[in-house]
Length: 236
Image (cartoon, rainbow, N blue to C red; front, side, top):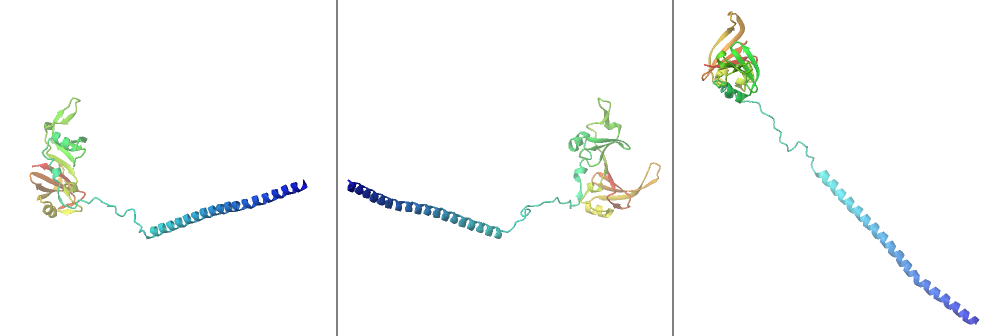
């Protein structure tokens, strides 16, 4: 009986030994597999870092070799050019002879009304000076009891025009001969302006003609037109 028990114990020990030997390779294989996985991940991450570093280096290289372009480069900057051509303002001269209705439609409504010497004068929204109507014959009472210019009344004079508005391109004082030659208008005479008592006012009037329009330049500098001068024009 003792022999049988010993034999069973011996068989048990042998079986346990073989079982332990069989598990060991599996554990080592599992450990190696895990190690391989870690290595693989580490390698992949390292490769990605290497690639990222390479791309970063290439990007920096491109950035360094790309020329800097100023923001304003390539944009076309335009500035308005001053009127350099010297010529008469024909648009202004074309207002002479138009009716009040025609001028109002062309230049806009009146912003100021002046009643005095020469009748009634109006400053228009887009006008060139003071547009004149001679007197009562050109006026009519409206329904509110206010005098207005008749729609069909012709404008025969425009007063207080700036020289540079009449003589386009004028930038400095010009002599009578220069005005006559450059702008193609006929100079007639110069005379001293006086008041109603024939007392000289210190102004000179330079008389020019352009087609059927009389151009009177008022200036304190005899025989010269400058920025302080002013002009009246009227139908001949």
